[in-house]
Image (cartoon, rainbow, N blue to C red; front, side, top):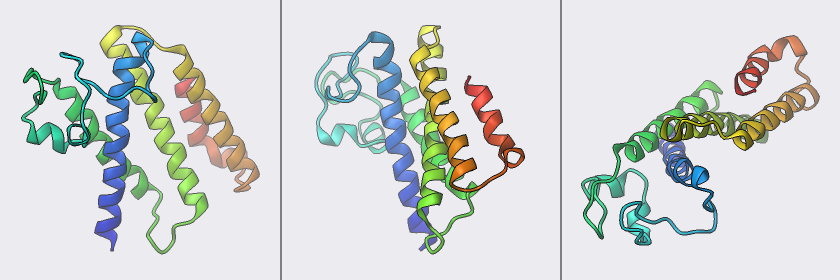
Length: 173
C-alpha cells in the first residue's frame, strides 16, 4: 500500500511541476496561466490531452513537439521530474502513512508544496528573465505568515517550536 501512495504523491508532484513550467513561461509575458490551453512555445499549436501528460508525453515524443517536431527544452522534463521527487520527499518528511493521514497532515503537506511552488516560480522566472516577480514573493510571504498563525492557533505550537517555519518565511521575504 505504501508504494501506491508514494506513486500517487509522485504523480501529484509531476502535475504540479508541469503547471510550474507553464507558469514560469507565461507569468513574465503577462499571459493567463489558468484559462488558456497549453500550446507549443515554437509553433503555438494548442496541445492535445496526450501531449500534456507530465514526463510521459516528453519521453514518448522524444522531447519534440508533435506538430512542428522542434525540440522542447529539457527544463520541462527536469522540473517535472524533480517536483515529483520533491513531492514524495516532502510527504516523507511528515512521517505520515495511509493509516495516519489526517486533515492536519494534508494542510502541512499543502503548505510545503505551496512553499516549494513559490521558490520554483521565483527561481525559474529569475533564471529565464533575470527578474524577480514581486507578486509571487508577496504570495509566498502571505502563505508563510498564514501558516505560522495556523501552527500557533490550531496546532498549539509554541513560537519557539516553529523556528523552521519562521526561517522559511524569512527566506521567501
